[in-house]
Image (cartoon, rainbow, N blue to C red):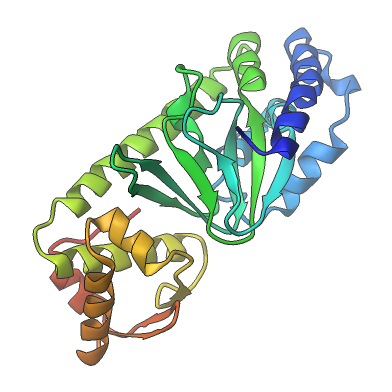
Length: 273
C-alpha cells in the first residue's frame, strides 16, 4: 500500500487538474489561475532538469501547471510506492534522493537505480497500472506529484504534441539508464565497477550545479553493493584502496575525488548520466 497521505491526496488532486486541462483544451485557460501550482515550479532548484518546467518555459505553462498537482515530502526511509502498488502518479524529485529496488525470490533486495533532483520516478508502471519495483527515500526528499489521470488528459485533450514528446524523452532516458546499469554490473573487475559508479555519480552532481569532486553518498555501502553486484565488504575494501592510492578521500559518507583521470582509466570508459 502507498502511504496514507499520498493515497488520500491523490483521490482529490486529479479533479482540479482535469478541470484546468478542460479549460486549456477549450481555449478558456486565461480565466483560470494556478497560483499554487506555478509558484513552486518557479522556486524549484531542479527546474532546469525538470521536463514539466521545460514545457512551461516553452510556452506551455498552463498545461504544465495543470498536471502538477502538489508537492510531497518523504522522510528518510519512507516509501513513495512499493512493488504491486497501484500506479497513481509520476514523481519528479525536487530535492534529496531515492533508490528504486525490487525484492528477489530469495527475499534479498536488488537496487536498480538511484534517483536525484530532476529524475522521474514511476515510469515503470505506465501502461501496466502497477509498480514492478519499490521507491524509498534515502534522505529527506521532496517530489512533485503528476497524477497519471491528469497526464492522460494532457495527452488526449491538448492539441500540442508537447506532452507526448515529453513522455518519449522520459522513457528514452530510462532505457539509457538501464543500458548503462547493465554495462556497469557486467564489468568483471570490481574496481572498474566502483570507479564507474563514482565517475557517473560525479557527473550527475556536476550536471545539477554541485561539485563534481566533493559530495555525499546518500546511499549505504550495502546499497551500493546491491546495485553493483558486489559484497558490502568488497565495496568498503575498494574505497579504502582508492584512498590509499590517493585517488580520493572517504570520511563516512563524504567523498572527495582527487584524481578523476585515474578513476576514468580504472572504469575503462568515460561515463556520463
